[in-house]
Each structure stands twice: as structure tokens, then as C-alpha cells.
Image (cartoon, rainbow, N blue to C red):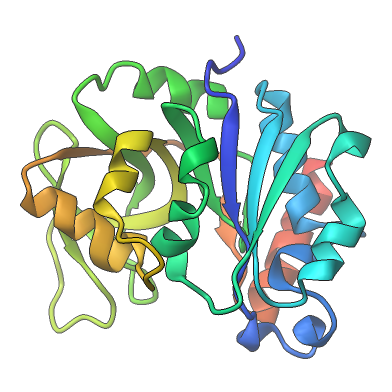
Length: 241
């Protein structure tokens, strides 16, 4: 089964400071993984699930991405870019695509290598009629380097705790950077403002009583923000291909 969701936003404006010297000459989403850019891995994974329209925001070394992917036709997809002279944050960058997005779309942070089954994620989404969105999460006690959400009995977000922490949380779920959003959620993002999904957007809609749900699965994904994690993902991919 192919997902009925046909669009994805890939947030790709970050500087990748902790990945230097690799990112001295390439933006973080272009990190080579088995001689293929991470961004290409992600585009190909989404395409397996019927998604052929991509929206990519840019800031650091934007021409590296644009020169490699162009309009996406080489990969049988369509790519629309948005250049940010100053980084607008995860939600602020998303907001700039508002007039081009369908009623429902995927979003992934560009520093994540993801092999998620997006068709299955969309099937779960289809059962959440009252939701503004869902986010991939993982139940764990190891979340010192991640933001966490506390969940209600129905799997909806009750509260978000941002790192660093002053205490441990008994029902903590590590928030991972893969989402499905209703376009309606963009109405809560201010125009041309630095605004973050985890820090501002999600706490705001939760406080307003809006529903936002967790999505758990065992599919592989890994954020790459250090040289060590880059090596770890490459080693995993050697067992995958």
C-alpha cells in the first residue's frame, strides 16, 4: 500500500557545527553515507512510499544541495526550495511553504537518516481524526540529549520537557524528528519569525487543548549531529544494503 500523503518538507538549513571538518564544505544533509548523501537516502525512502513532491529549506552552502539535486527530475521527484538569509528555526522554515502544501504532509529534520515505513505511519495517522499531527517517539530512559514528551493514556502529548533537565520523568518518550502535520497547524506559526517546533509550536497547541499524538515503531532512524554518530550510521547501513 502506498501512502495517500504525497508531500514532505525536509528541513535542511542547519550549520552542522559539531560535524566539522566534514561540514566545512558541505551542509549537514549532504553528509556522505556509503558514498551517497543523507538527503538522497531520505528522498529515496520517501519515494518508495509514493511521495514525489519535496520542499527543502536552505541556508548554509545552499548551492551544494541545489547543484546536486536540481529540480529533482533525475530522481523522478519534484523539489521546491526556500532560501533563508537568516535561519528561521524548524517551524519558521516550515511556515514559508504554507501556500504550497496540501492538507496533510510529512516533515523530517534533515540531519536524520530514516528508514521508516511511511505507509505504516500514514495508516496510523488516518485513525487520528482529531489530531493536528503525530510525531515519531521512542520510550526510553536514555534521553539526556533529547527533548521528551509525556503522553496521556490515548497516546496524545500532555507535556513537553526540553533539554537540559532538572529531573527524571516517569513516562518520558524521546521525541524524534519525523512528523505528519495537518496544514492547519501552520496557522499557529508567526510569519517571518524564528520559531521552533518542539520549543514553541507544540507546547502552544497542547496548551490550547489541541490533539497531537505519538507514533512508535521499531524502524531505524538516527539523528547525525556528531562524527561518532556519522560513523555509527554508516556501520549500520553496511548491514542494511
